[in-house]
Image (tube, rainbow, N blue to C red):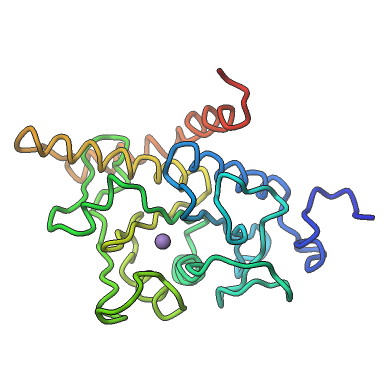
Length: 254
Ligand code: MN
C-alpha cells in the first residue's frame, strides 16, 4: 500500500524527507496541459521545474506527449540529465536542455522547450525576434540564436542529445529569457513554472505579431525602458493568465 502523500510511486521510492511538494507536481501537470492546449507543445517539446527542496534536481515527465502527462509520469532528474530512479521508463532525448540550463542559471525555476511554428522563421533568418508589444517585453535585449553547427558540425540531427550540446545551448542563452535554436525551436526560462508557461505562450504570439507587423511596413519596437517596465508589470500579473488557463484545461470554464 502506498502512503497517502499524493506522490507518484516512481518518486516516492527515491525520496524521503526531500520529496517535492505535491503542489509543484500539480503545477507541472497543469503546465503541460496548458502548453498543449495552447499549441505551444504538441506531441513534442517539454516543460520542467526545478525541485523545490533539492535545487540540484529537476522534475520532467517521461518521454510522452505533454497533453497526456499525469503526476504518475513525472520523474526526477539530476544535473547530469539522468533520471534519479534506477529503472526509469524511456526519457526525453533532449533532457540535457534542462539540466545544463539549471546548472548555469540558479535564478531559473522552470524551463519550456518548444517548436511552435511562428517562432521558427526567426531561427533561420537574419530578422531578430524582439520585444514588440507589452506581452513579450521579457524579450528585452533580444533572443540569442543557438547555432548547433558550432558544436556539432553540419551533420547533426538538430537534437540536444548530450550534456555538451546542452551546455553550448545554455551558454548561448546567457542571461536571456529566451534562446532560439536554429532550424529547431526555442527554449524559454522563468523563475516559476507560471512565468515560464506565460512567456512560452507570448513568445509564440509575439513572433506572429512581429511577422504580421513586418508585412505592413517599418515597425516600432518597445524601447529598452518600455520593455523593462512592461516586463515588471507582467511579472506581477502572471496569476491572471495562469488561473484562466488552468481552469480551461481542468474543464472548469466554458
Ligand atoms: Mn526539440
